[in-house]
Amino acid sequence: MYTEKVMELFMNPRNAGRMEDPDGVGEVGNSRCGDIMKIYIKVKDERIEDISFETFGCASAIASSSMVTEMVKGLTLDEALAISNKDVVNALGGLPPQKIHCSLLAEEGIQAAIEDYRSKQKARAEATA
Amino acid sequence: MTERYVYMDHSATTAVDRSVLEAMLPFFSEHYGNPNSLHLWGRTARKAVNQAREKVASLIGADASEVIFTGGGSEADNLAIKGAASTRKDKGKHVITTAVEHHAVIDTFKWLEKEGFEVTILPVDEKGMVRIPDLESALRQDTILVSIMYANNEVGTIQPVAEVAKMCSDRGVLFHVDGVQAAGHIPFNVRDLGIDMLTMSAHKMYGPKGVGGLYIRKGVKIDPLVHGGGQERGLRSGTENTAGIIGFGASAELAVKRLADGSIREEIRLRDLLIDSVTSSIEDAYLTGHRTERLPFHASFLIGSLEGESMLLRLDAAGIGASSGSACTSGSLEPSYVLLAMGISHELAHGSLRFSLGKDTSEEDIVYVAENLKKIVSDLRALSPLWKNRG
Image (cartoon, rainbow over all chains, first blue to last red; front, side, top):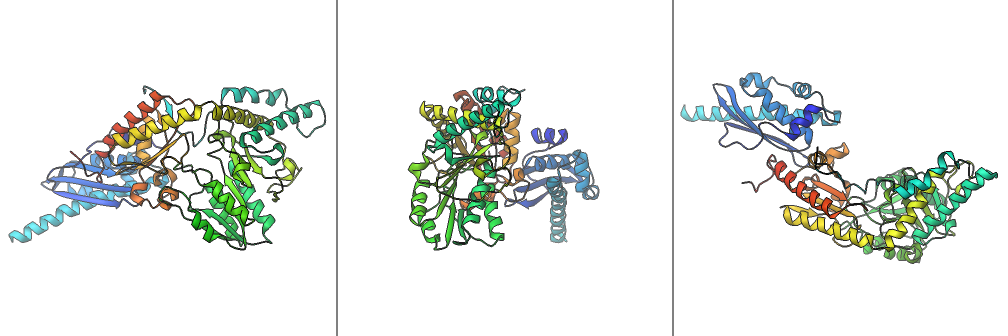
């Protein structure tokens, strides 16, 4: 049912775990549906310098989290926002149809983390203005 | 490669026992006759089918004439429920079942509802058990059928079948029991229980897949689903699955032996060892279902802050076969309706795990499963944003 890539990332996820003092945090999904993805980012000069995730969910949710964090690490925020769930699915070599929503969570998780970072920046700028 | 392979999904299916396979083999190419033929070939097959019927009947304390062979447990459930509803529809249109039945029962009741029957679905308590007062108040003048499982496939809970039977027979209501998980694993006698119909499945008790049985108490009339040549007392037409039926007979014989020789006591000991290991060594892990009124081979859990499929796949990688009622294993977004009916939250229900032991499960297997599960839970919780007790 899962590709080798999905299984490999599920068994050995990259960038896994909580981050201390992140610049932005995005949490998407809900526990009622069985998927929560939490993305932590550190940003330097508008680039994602470091990233990690915590995921409650099935193998495809964990693999999608791992994949998306690898894909956006080192990218500018705008480049990261351009990564779509289809890009994640392709990089995983495909996901079963009923698991596509996991890749959407990955896309939305990155967006939410960047949004959080930007709104914090804005608040900081306004506070010092 | 893993250290061991441990199959712990006997509620899903069991291996065909060697003795069962050997009993079956001659009936493919050697004794291949149609049991309905008059010649030697036919008579040989008929004799073996009759013997198999005796064996299945004696497992449950029935008379051989009261056992019908079907193409499996789901078919037997369908035959019992639709057949009884059809026969009795002029007496009333009200039928009763529970919220924790197998799909083969619950979906058949939903179909009856579309056909104009009125369906009452009884709730269960937090252990998955039906409350007798709920049944009592649900029974009406026009109730024609009650169907309640002997023991639940997901949480192992055994229902108060004898009490239900008494209440139904006092009111002249037919009582069907889905005994797929229980038959061959719990000693019982259909006469002592006082039930009208009982579903069995061969492959849950070391027999082959594709063959089941329905006990129908003498005097109880139901309509057939499959019309044709009139086999199985006209209740299930079609040439008999001879080898499968003989396999079922052999598996019933094996079950009778196991029920008498202390095997079940040992199974319960190993089950309890697993339950105690998991609930004592893993934080936020709970048993689902009843602690003592449960299938001897069945241990089911909820593991907090985790999702079932991820645990199953990690267990699989460690050579352990288990199952889960999580949404991700069912292909929908809803977790198990059985767990939800027991009042368990969606969040916790996603973390369900079921281990069902078999006759060859050893204490080493149990220790291996408990140790691996503990490590897997800790590894996956390190990834879970829901897990609060970190570091």
